[in-house]
Image (cartoon, one colour):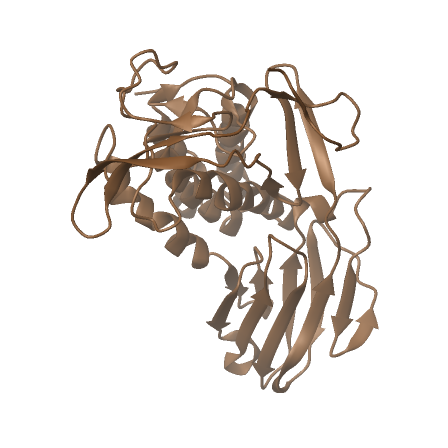
Length: 344
């Protein structure tokens, strides 16, 4: 099972979990992060996942990734971030987790969560049943369709762990340092021990914009430690504007995190962060061009049509999904994101 995708996604956390027994967090992290880097180097996909249409399948963006791979990798990276030996390592794992949560997992689910494909593809224009000439080699012809349990039932039973565990990883505490770590921006609220049992609410529409507000009620001082997303840590990124209790403050990110001292106060808008997102293009010889806006991988709107294949109980159903707009498109070599030219 060395090449099985789900096994590899689960095994990424082996190093940091075993480090709880050995006490050697650096060695545990090194093992886990090497595993993730190798998966990305040889099988990584533009959506942050790695190809595994049952077994590891290389970097071609038309090879699939099983939904179970995505949620298991998310949990491995969440644990790696929390048990990393330092801030820089933790930020790296959170960058990878964020990419999966905002790209790979949504790409594996229908809007209402009643259907999913067994395999998703970073580069595909249809998701239909009974594909006898499919490119994947190990899974059946139903693997690409959105359905209740296409190809095999494991993803139907397993995909539910993705977002709950992600939500549970948005904040974590360092009681020894009296710090609350805001790991990834997403609408959320938490009650924590630091700050005299502080209540913290994070209001944001991220990843669709970079306006973030922390509403905090606390009776004791504490440090709010905020991970800046990877694209905002880039040397070419726009400046990040930070307001602390309504006053502009200059805060430099240290090893991927902002550190803000929060004094005691009744519930108020304690921290506000604003920046801008600019589109970027990443190119590679084996994957072509991928366009990102902040952490999100952009996709063309092909005006897909959903055709019912089979209806089950409640709202569950199997669907064939096809494009109605041209999909044979090329990205200009210039970084200017102008109109795309059809190859038809």
